[in-house]
Length: 101
Image (cartoon, rainbow, N blue to C red; front, side, top):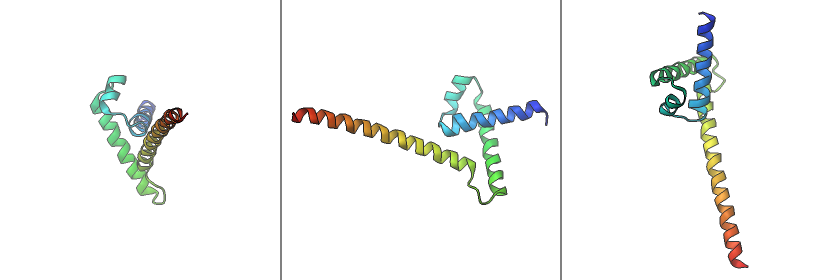
């Protein structure tokens, strides 16, 4: 494999890890923002998923990277929701505290 192919594979892997898995972006939003075809993104996702499965089968004691990234995204979304709820409750408490005085 040539150096350019190795670099292209590494870049596509990083692209998928960051934008699609960790941020939860859709194919459509990535296509619109970066001008990459939906087919390319789909191919990269498939390759990344296969690579994660191979790595998991080689190292049985470690959790699958893909699963960890998905869990990380889910937890980030849950944290963002909790922060929104907390902010709402603070505003509601301040509103009702003004009414008491």
